[in-house]
Length: 143
Image (cartoon, rainbow, N blue to C red; front, side):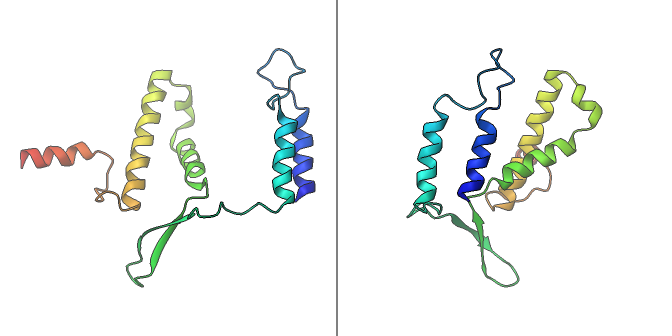
């Protein structure tokens, strides 16, 4: 593992930052060597596991059929990665050339709908099976 991390660091160490005019500046921060040495010291001491006393799993409900508890891990970035995957797939290739305002509205609406579905799945709100909760509010006011 140490060798793999070292090789990864060596690869990025001299990689120029494409956003800088000065091509001699790397894409890493100025004190990258200090940070790398500090992190490698942690690895050498075996400090690779979760911080002590921090629960990495939260119970989010129970399975209906078995009654067993259902857990969600807070260690992962999978939900965020899935978000970008689904967002890029939901946008038609020709829509990527739309105006900044239209793309911004589309992105906000997708994020809103994604958050509603996540809240429903986590049991934080009653499932309404669509992404326009204001319609439910309107029905309550009119009824």
